[in-house]
Length: 97
Image 1 (spheres, rainbow, N blue to C red):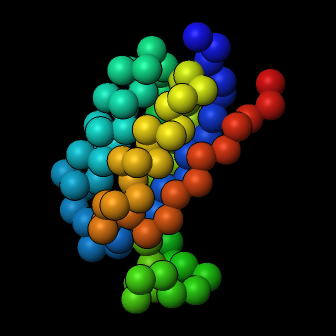
Image 2: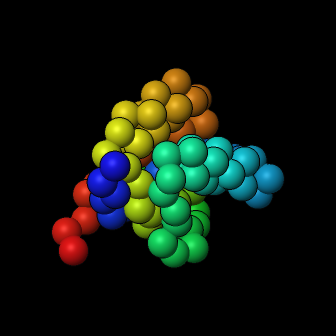
């Protein structure tokens, strides 16, 4: 199965503690490994203000993850994140080599 290089921008609710943020990262990492993928770099995590309010939040925890995964991974990722109330926004993007 062909692997692609992707970047995921994830915005979580700002009131999450470090353990909850790490739990989200571990879930994503587990899903990546199940599809024979891998993290290409350490996730970048920072708390920032939002340009506009999302789900009544004015700030968020931004996480940027660069990873390599199979082409069917993003569908599974979408199913995992779209019903999570702690996820404000997410967007996986295919990177060109």
